[in-house]
Image (cartoon, rainbow, N blue to C red; front, side, top):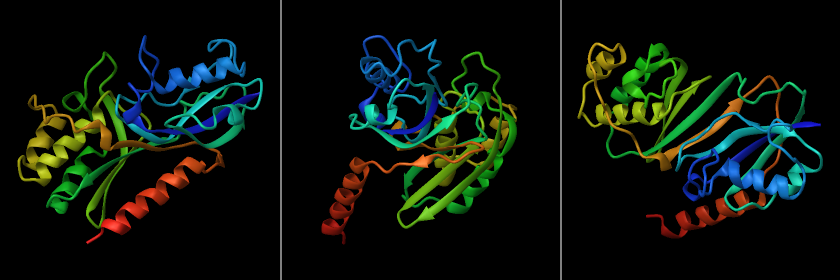
Length: 248
């Protein structure tokens, strides 16, 4: 029986998603729990796969793992430190979570007086298919990617920036956000970003911090059976109380 599980995690607690020797990672902790409970025996034979390999410090509300399960995987994965189950779906044997319709990454900014109009102009530049060589840490993969949409959402003192597409390069979103920050603070011009995007000149706008980036959701041709972890409900209540007692 093959199962797809939508997971979330607090990226600040891990050295990234993918397994690394002698480091605590999201994938490593999940595999440790699954093997110990004999839900899976071998990651290759049981085809343990994931949708996205997030960097150190990056969190998720909707990454997806899939594997051939030999028991109640949902029950086994409950109560992990910093890792939560948000949904599940029994899928076909050939399902690979990487083959999605789209991924949504969201970056959170505190509004320090950004020029929202300029943020939006910069956001629109990234939409469509481009060579993102100046906006990624290149690792040998094709630097050409297509971004379906970039949207800037202002909510009170917070600015949310959503990037929607099927595939992103290493550090790509954080480098695009860094460019947007510089434009929004009038430290760079929209035309500087445009020149870099069209590779007319080499330009490094820096890398935005990882802790404000979240893999927000991944879309497929099906919907997950939703689960809302009690840990998340408690955290939400705690944060609401913190805001309420300290609001001005």
